[in-house]
Image 1 (cartoon, rainbow, N blue to C red):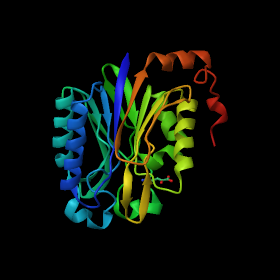
Image 2 (tube, rainbow, N blue to C red):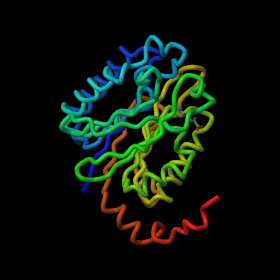
Image 3 (cartoon, helix red, strand yellow):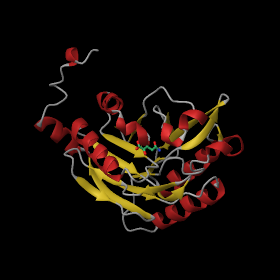
Image 4 (cartoon, protein in one colour):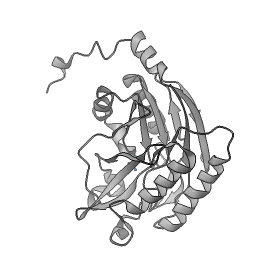
Length: 264
Ligand SMILES: NC(=O)CCC(=O)C(=O)O
């Protein structure tokens, strides 16, 4: 199975869901006219509010309904699976940093709330952490997703790989001066789990940060097969899911794990 992926590397207006929804619609319309139709579309982290966490009372999305409406429309318009970046989802009196995933028919395929909250951007003060992995069956294949800071926790991505993920999507708002960390962590997660890593970062400025862009697609051999610059753009790549099995067959990392040594 081959998937064309498209990463919407966009700027995000601080605390302006209306403007950000318009940006998503504009990029999706651009994508609808592109030569290569995508099978999988990925948005960045907190694409509707940015990190305007002090105004979440006002702007958080109740049960993610605002985002779900837009993301379902995108899936149906493009006939593509949508890994909907993430939004500030108000649920049961708390606010989570949540990814909603829609399949190409517009059905909700699952959701994931960021498990590791990033203190350098005050997430732990305003957000609640998720507790479950993000795993979705799309076209009969298992894809996973985590969010931004989660990539610093190799155990967490390993859990997703062990549960069958062949493609790991990473919506992010990753700022300078840590571009090297971003690139190297994504490549390492792809090599060690022998899976595709499809990471969509934002560009622009907000909350005192300048965001790196450099959305990337890394194949299961650790090769960067697509990478954005630091500007608004749609980053395209083709995934060949058979390569995951081929690489796992070539170096049998999963069969060679010594789990009895890893207990603390
Ligand atoms: N939005 C985030 O989780 C940022 C994570 C980050 O910048 C890092 O260095 O980790």
